[in-house]
Length: 299
Image (cartoon, rainbow, N blue to C red):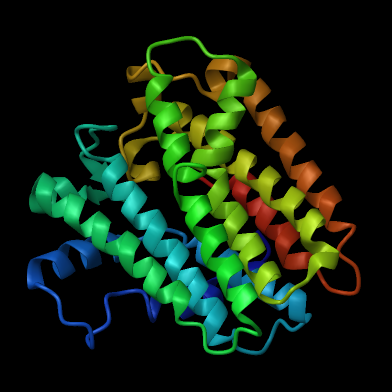
């Protein structure tokens, strides 16, 4: 990761983190706010919201001006949805994990009911954020954004992928089915991060290219997750490693081996970079760097 990209990425993270916690002007019971903010503030790279802001910069070909409040809201909505999914994913009924981002999981800290309600509240508030768009050009674009976000998070997207992932435990699945699981479970929110700004700005000229880019970085992100689950320590990951093996889940590593999985991640990265060649008249340097960052991260 170059210093130029690192500084840029850190600045985008700050934009998100400065507005991430539950706003004071919304009255809500204290304990649910504590549980929500506990998980929101636990850390994380903020890749989904940062990617959303990066795509706006590419579409405007402007990498120095502040991002619009509308795109920041969409980025925040993605991080709220992602955080809710982690809270629920850690529950005993799902992955039953007790460590997330280096701290006890939400249900360990606040109880199962508290964690469920915190996740419910985060998901619901995400759609408040995504609806608070001050400069949307038309009601048609507004509707497309809400529909795309709901599909990405719901049964035809992330939640559906989580169900397929649970169903795949303790049984053999094909490599194509594995790709389908993770294109939904991991890929759909990353795809939304890329395509929501495209929809907002009505940039049909780059939609297909950025869709291919998003799908390939989504797959490479999951492949690296699978590799880290096999090779990293709890300190590096901020969560317990080896959980996929313990649950007898099919992974890219179980299908391809460690070296084969690394090669597949590189293939996806190259596909993502190739897709960017069709995005003309703008600088895609930071998107190329992000694809590299995803493939070389250690947590």
